[in-house]
Image (cartoon, rainbow, N blue to C red; front, side):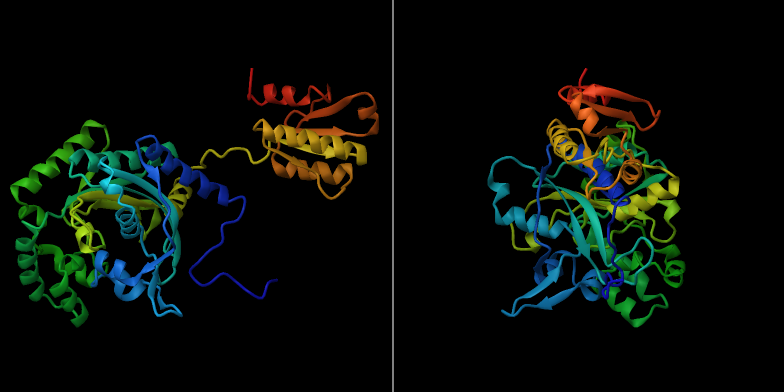
Length: 423
């Protein structure tokens, strides 16, 4: 047993379970790649101020959950707690918005870090796939991203998720609502920290998960009643486009995302099979974020979907994602000459795209065939001195047990046909 263990609130991804995570990442990324989104990768840490300004000084992420540290050179950095601010910073730094083709459409995949109380579905290190459309104010973009996320989940076989939708207004109408909400909150029996938060960002109080707070919020004013005509029209257009695409959603007038930068469209994907940590992803429009972090006005929209929680949601529904076979062919050599020949065959199979493995370590026939079974291979190739003297290899169907002799020079083509690679 190792002296060291993974840090509290983190996990290791190990085979065979890691294959599920790869399948989820691929399923989420596939519709994005098919819709004009290019891949972006940013550093695992950024300047603390990027998140303080963008995510919000009053958010739990910045005040309680961010892993911040000072480098030997005196720089204040933080492990990234979310992806949007980093992606927008990178796009601005590279002047992607000046290339003349807006919106800039980007997708990413990576690990994120928040210091939270560990529980199932909530980790200190977690994985997300995200997408951002930067530089255009268009209801069709908001709808596109919601539809693509729905497509990704359904391609995995996930069915029991719900899409919650709301509008948070903009700089014209939100201040009026903010004042009305603050007046309401000041009359409640709230602790000092919550009252202080209400003065900084009252919408964050609506996102408080404590029952004692939620019960008092029953009569809180709703933002939808304060939306200006432009925000109402924008939201109705988003709703109409999603509906026309056949994607069902629920209007949730109390939905507030946990980050300060959201404006207008906001949405969340929830799965009721996950208990308290029911959100599997979410996002929305963030038209003012670029200016918050020192850039020009670039209205944008995006989302992030949790890989960890999506895997848990699949397990809750009993859905096994379709996984490519890790090994289709397993080679078992008996003797040094067979070892040399079969290693060459395995190399050639891999070159033509067939997943193949080899009985390493000089095990006997019985032990090697056990390994072949464990690998999940559909076929095993077995060869000894007599086989090679006759110029053949033994091809065994691991499902039926049928065994046939195939010429050494024909084995690769034969397996391509049997595995449906050609023919």
